[in-house]
Amino acid sequence: MGPGHASRPAIVLGTVAAFGAAVWGVTLHLLALDARPPAVTNLAVLLVPAALATFVAAFGAGLWLGDRRQAIRTAAVAAAGQSRLAMVQHEMHAAAERAALEKQRIALLLDSAAPGAALFDAAHHLLAWSRGFAALAEVPEGALQPGLPLADLVRLQPAGLTRKLSRHGIEAGIAGAARRQLGDGSHVEDRWAPGAEGGMLLTCRLAEPPRQAVPLSTAALAALCEEEVRTRLPRLGIAITAGDVAAVRMEAHAIRGVAASFGLDALAAALLVVETAARAGDLGALAAASNGLPDLAEDGLRRLARQPA
View 1 (cartoon, rainbow, N blue to C red):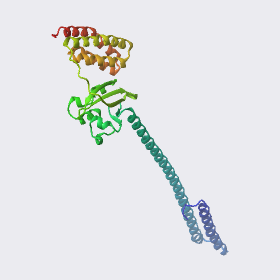
View 2: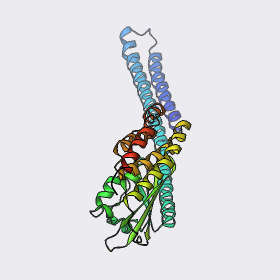
View 3: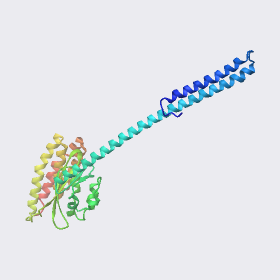
């Protein structure tokens, strides 16, 4: 008499009703056999067992129906849970397949971008890389993992400034390029450019060794520095006035590199403040930091021009 079939409640209720009818039928029949008025004792002897039997049968039927209803609810909840679990598992499997396809697509794009290519996120963590990147970066293939910080990647490279990626140039968030020399003497050109959502795409290609240039005199170098500063400083001012923080970062970074290379330390320090304010998007701090740039530039260029040849 378990709760498994839909017809069983009717069978149970019918059985209980038949049992009650039989009990009360027998009781009333026994009372009818005695023509005399039944004594209280006789009534108690006949009616109390019948009442108790009826109560027990009804109570048992109620318990059975309650258990059956609870079992049905539990089965329905379990079935719904299994259905939701199956749906979640299906969605997770589909998401894993999409992620695998996206990873393959990115790998193919990086392979086509350059012999060695790597993609970093906004926090400068490695996202994906091409098959030739490890060799051109001179790092073990097994050390490349998604989420590897750029700083750790640079530490994996051989010692020596000429063997390492330009970490600070990549972290500056603007396009740039640099050259490295591999252990076999060949040269690699690294180029990086900002991508979507603050990411950075790095490409590495073998390059011809640089030609031996005729050394420039101190005066010629000073003239090149002055030309670079005087050309870029007005563009920096225009970008600051327009609130174009991307252009400000690019121009300030370029001028700062020249100033630091030629010993214009005060100008380089002021440009670092400008570049930092531009990276933070703080236009107020950017305007305040740019006020003294022309005077610092003129003072530095005058001192550079007075240096002995």
